[in-house]
Image (tube, rainbow, N blue to C red; front, side, top):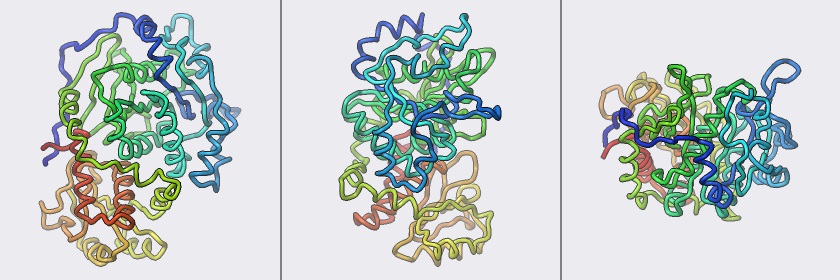
Length: 428
């Protein structure tokens, strides 16, 4: 399997939406019966505080109240603090501050449920918050076909990756979608990109040509237009601090410019690939029993990402501090200084250690056998085209399955290869 070429847009218009407000109005019964919209905080609906800094909209559940809490405790706090709204306009009060010339096509829409569950600055979230959100979302998905989650952009890709790894087989089989949206602009900015982000999120749920799975919606300004991109949940990253998301190894699935919708060949390609979803295991079955509720949380605490530009002595130091899962950011397609190779040879032989190598480059495939300087070491796993967020998640899950379910290093490598294939990041 080689790395896929990033898909280019078909210059022809695939579909047109004459009027977004009318389009959503026609679909209102579907929205009221099969859509849930959850707001978790973030720039998309933040306010400026007394110091003129952006702060999430007020809600009883703040990050401060989760300090020292585990996944189960955070999940209980979320369930206790669900505040429902009558429509999306009430969920996002900034809609009423937009100028009269700004058309918001979804402001009056009613969903089966629209609710705010927290007031988190996503830059302060950690894996315990991600897993708690996952548990909450699984319960919501038992009642609806489409779950839209708005939150901050700093950890959105991390959370979307966890959802994709855990839920993809279930979502595909049940034809359900989880759609993450964040915005680089607060909704209080006039004609904010937040409006387009939410428009794109609702459309993603309604579009029948998009199969069940996890998606990320992002919006940008280009040539005086607001452009919406629909991206796969795995392999999508926030490359810069601007709050815009990219899929370096696959590209967008769909792009929306005003009322025109364009698609890449990735859209059709994924539709064919996803038919092979049975090759990917139902990982959720290992983690959502009462006896294993906290297993994933414990595994995340064992992981650490480290660059080969650091002193290689950091590996034994981290091991002595209790770390057992090492995600190594190598150079190029998986090369590193000689001292790093020696350290990894020594550490990977330990039965309770997992080592996964990714590239520090913006994109590309990790081929450990290509160069003599490559980290081609027995038991070291190639992260292929995975970015940091996805690599962390799959390394943690792979290690946990190795320690508790009898998985081998080859099984973990196969897991990664299959996921990269199913998400369109590598070829056959």
